[in-house]
Length: 103
Image (spheres, rainbow, N blue to C red):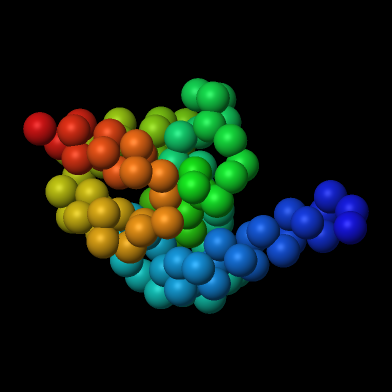
């Protein structure tokens, strides 16, 4: 399988896993309105594994930018609760960092 079809399959699997829902604002959207977000961005040593990837709408992903989820969610209680409710497949260390940053 070439790289583009592997990437396409991974995107489809993440969208299906997350129910086509932005884990930050909780909207269920068409896939054309969704992106794949790195909970810990690649520029901050995040990787491409499913434990670091979530579905995000374009608006939330743009607002989050290159920050980690815990940096962005620290002062966003609604989005933080949505993330903790819907991002069940991310690594426990990421979920813990989101909770810790809110204190």
